[in-house]
Image (cartoon, one colour):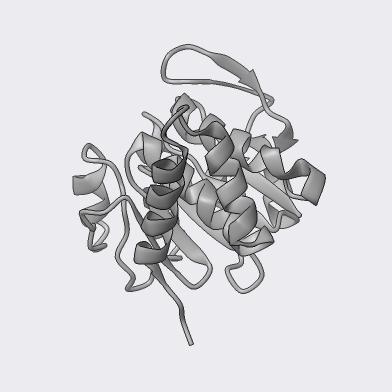
Length: 202
């Protein structure tokens, strides 16, 4: 089971790295995440250069695709050639976005009429795509999920792990990385966010 964490130039480190690091704690169970980039090297919004682990074409074979955010998200959605490299299929893939990554899902026509979560700065641009933005950190309908706020990336990872390996696996991961002395409440918060934000279809 493979996860593509799509990471564009200008990316937010928290969005890509938290999700991939949490998911990769499940490698022993066969779930593995890879930083997936359109060019061999991308540079974060804070100047951190990262070599992609997989090329963009990896998204077609991944079981899960997470679209990270960044300061160049509007440039990404305006680039027809780049968008064409994301032939995603929610009938066979879990697809999620983090913060401004919701713009990419909207551009790909994947949100349909569902509301989305995003960060405060991206909100007006997502709303300009005729998408209702929720005052919530996480929302999912079927195989599509969105998260808003950098630290909500833990909820996106919790959703992926729960869907792929079950709730116990997600609880184990979140419980391990939680601040010492706050394990139970951190796990409870993550599971509540996912359960409260998830709409099970048909």
